[in-house]
Length: 208
Image (cartoon, rainbow, N blue to C red; front, side, top):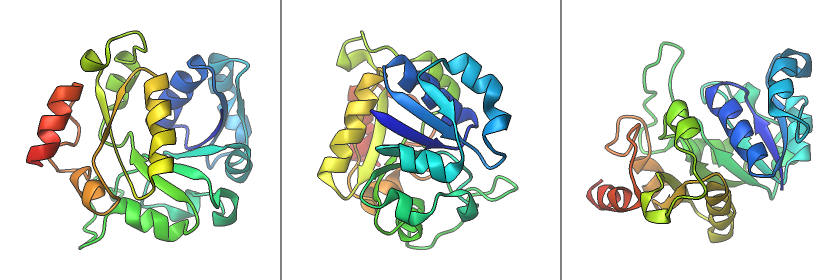
């Protein structure tokens, strides 16, 4: 599958490495332009290339958003992700690392408003990038793999993201809709920032 990654920081780079290893083609981008990513591309190998934000979005069948949530200008043009599965791995932190109060909304619902025709799925925002890199193991039994929570409003989009999660060696756990499930996955919640196995994740989700 072709995947466009918007953001080349900790999560963006880690996901690019895992997805290329799993056999996917990657276009990775950042706000500084493709030339700033030459070292990353050398590490990722021939299945990855650097591009502009909009070109990476156009390239991908699936798009991963891994830029600061507080910077909507870092997102691709909405038309380029229309009808595409868009994975929202962002968290609503301010520039001084404070959680932004969104009232009754969630960060992914706000992302859906910014990209109104995208098929948004919240995923990869609750797991530390080093855990993501170190615990990837497609050959483990599902029960012993670490869980990745997802939330979204469209079953087909969630299935696509779940398949990618399995490809890179984790177990997907469906937390529900963008509103209800997304709220459980926000920073500061009981599910945020903690590694869970499948059973632990299901139990924690029931208690959240």
